[in-house]
Image 1: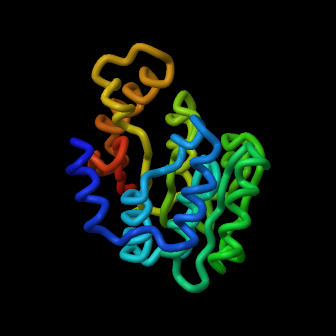
Image 2: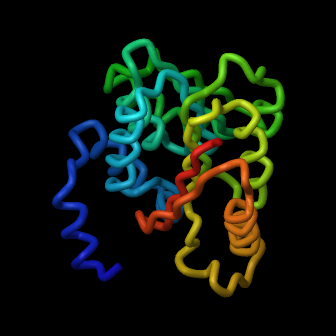
Length: 209
C-alpha cells in the first residue's frame, strides 16, 4: 500500500493508547529486530476480533516484546486467559512490564521454550477459541497442525506475515518458500475456511470447521 494511504488507514482506526505507544517506542529502540512487532492497525483488528468472538481462551506462538499479546489480552472476556509461547526471556521481559502497566498481566501465561514442544504437551481439552502464529516461518505448518488439535470447531487461527513483503510470489529464501508452501497448504485444507487479509504484511484468518 502507498505510504500515504497506509497512514490514512491507520489514522482512521483506534490509535495505540499511551501504554501501547510506549511499547512501540521501546521496541523500536531494538533496531532491526523491531520489524518483528505487529503493526498498530493489526493490533487494533486483533483486539476487536477477540472481543467479537467472545474469546475466553487464546494462544499465541511468537510473543517477541508482547504487543500482540497486549492486544489479544485486552479483548479477552473478564475471566479470559492467553497462553504465550516464546523462546526469549530477554524480549518477553519487555512485554511483561507493559502487560503489568496495562493491568492484564494476570491474564497471560507466558511459557518459555521451543513452541512445538510446548504445544505438543498441551491437552486438547479444554480447547482454545483463538490462536495466533507469528514465529519462525519454517515451522508454520507444524504450529498450524498443533493448533488444529487444540482449537475448537468454530474457533479462529490468525497467521501473520503471509505476504512476506510480496516475496511469496517468487520466494528466494527459506522463509519465503516456507510461507508460500504454508499458504498453499491452507488453501487446499478442507479442515478450515480461509481468508487472506491485506493487513500489514498479510494476515490469514482461518476458521476451524
